[in-house]
Every structure is written in C-alpha cells, then in structure tokens.
Amino acid sequence: FNTIDILTVPFINTTQEAFLSAVEDRVTTRKNTFVVTANPEIVMYAQDDAHYMSLLQNADYVTPDGIGIIKGAAILGTTLPERITGYDVLLDLLKWGNDAHRSAYFVGAKQSVIDALTPILATKYPNLNVKGIRNGYFDDFAPIAADIATKQPDMVFLAVGFPKQEQLIADYRHQNNGLWMGVGGSFDVLSG
Ligand code: UDP
Image 1 (cartoon, protein in one colour):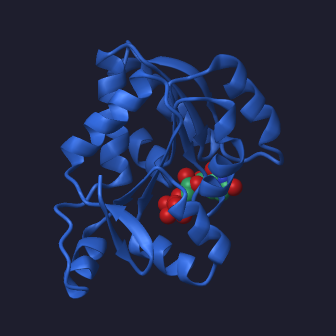
Image 2 (cartoon, helix red, strand yellow):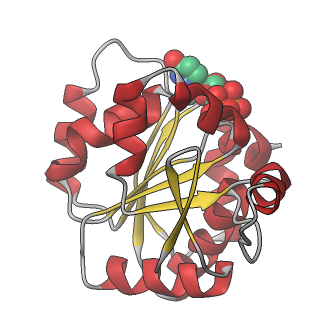
C-alpha cells in the first residue's frame, strides 16, 4: 500500500477490507508482520519520543485508528479512505482465524479479564487454536517470548497498552514469523 504521512507517521492508504486481505495472506504464508493501529494519542506521543516514532516507522502497517486520524488527514489536505481500528481488526482476524483454522496467542490485560475472555474465545471461535493466553502483568517478557517461539502461533495479540506493546513487539517479533499486533484495551472490551 502507499502511505500518507501524518506528522511523520506513515498511515496505509487503503480500505479495511484490502488491509485485512493483505494481512491474512501474510499470515497464511507465515510472513513476519507488525501491525500498529495508531490513534491520535499514539501520533502525539510519538512527536516527543523519537525512538517510539522509529518503531512506528518500521512497522509493516500503521492503520488509522479512529475518526481523529481521518480528520487530521483532511486538515492536512489529504484523504484516508476509512478508519481501521484495533478492535475491529482484532474481531475480523479472530473470525477469519476461526474459519481458516489458524492459531493465536494472547498476552495482556488483568487476570480477571483473561478468565472471562478464555471461555468467550472458545465459544465464539471454536476452530481458532489458542496456543497461549495470559495476563499482561509480567516482569520479564523473555520467557513468554520463548513460549511463543516454541508454539509458533500464526497471530500474537499483545494488549498491554502503548508504548510498551510496540516496544515488546519490535524486540521479540523475530522469534515468530506471524502477525504481531498491539491491541491496547481490546481484551477488556471483548471479555465483557
Ligand atoms: N495492561 C497490561 N499490563 C500492564 C499495563 C496495562 O496488561 O503492565 C493492560 C490493561 O489491563 C489494559 C490495557 O493494557 O487491558 C491497556 O488498555 P488501554 O485502553 O489503556 O490501551 P492504550 O490506549 O494505552 O493502548
């Protein structure tokens, strides 16, 4: 996809449908893929943190998460077709993963959220192979990354909030050739 820079963050200039299709192809062929769904808060944070900005600029896809980004593009005289939010992408990929019998690994949120989420995933997505699911309160991600490296899930969803989730993905993505995506508070929403 071509990209449109908003305050130097390169947003993909495409529809949610075309984006999902590209991601699904990459997951199917086990290509290492880092997705950031960036909202205005993320764009503003990156203005003052050059390292975080470089993480965004080195992701495979940055999507416009919310109407604020679409409006920002318009103010800057460009057009992005539609918002592509983290929560919508997560739901679509879970549905696709269920239909296509793919696997996923979930890290993030509180243990109570994980306890509620586990049966919901099993009921809604019975053909999705959940290779791991754990809370986002850990001291060291290395053992979790080692487990991911062993199990090789097709998709890793990391819900520990920004900027931490993007930093962890940048540090550990090489250990599993699949999708890595930060999904912020999405597990909280999905679980209740
Ligand atoms: N969280 C976590 N570990 C932490 C800090 C936060 O798992 O060390 C979780 C928190 O429980 C919540 C999510 O990360 O589920 C952050 O949600 P938020 O909507 O604040 O996401 P953001 O907009 O910061 O990306």
